[in-house]
Amino acid sequence: MTLAKVGVLALQGDFAEHLAVLRRLNVEATEVRLPGQLEGLDGLIIPGGESTTIARLMDVYSIREALQRRVKEGMAVWGTCAGMILLARRLVEDRPEPLGLMDLEVRRNAYGRQVDSFEADIPIKPLGESPFHCIFIRAPKIVNVGGGVQVLGSLAEGGVVAAQQGKLLATAFHPELTDDTRFHKYFLDLVAAPQA
Image (spheres, rainbow, N blue to C red):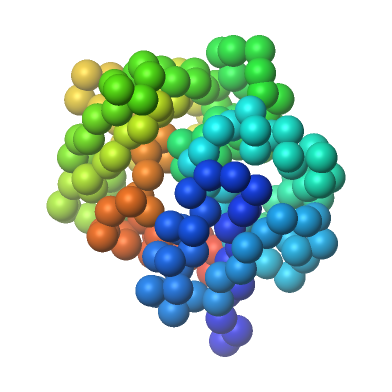
């Protein structure tokens, strides 16, 4: 069996943290900055950062169309925080232009500014009994999900913060900033899964 090749979009944001977790899990992980670097990948992580900046750089480097094509070909993608914003079909705000890959509507900075960042332990069904410690930094929130989207986790006071649609995964928080590798392992299972 061939080992999965996973890329991390390395245009801006906390891509180094995702790469470090993947390497701890002995995954062949590579930085992605150009459209050609998407070829041959089985999965891609779009990290947290500044969604407007990442979207602008995706367009500057012509990554948007190549990424949309690779998803149609079956590549798994996981967006964390800003990455979740970019995966969405619609945003409450008028910018940036998302990729339109997941049937989600997302509100940016839904919980306030940097000073309003918080942490919460949230049950995430596919990860088992023990809740996942979630770190929210200027976090977005999923305000609407389409029919094909499975909600994986919500805050107790409301607000969907983790969802999956086929081989696409979105989290409003930052699993890469914890020592818990369960979310990365779950994504790697999606990467390895046959195309539905």
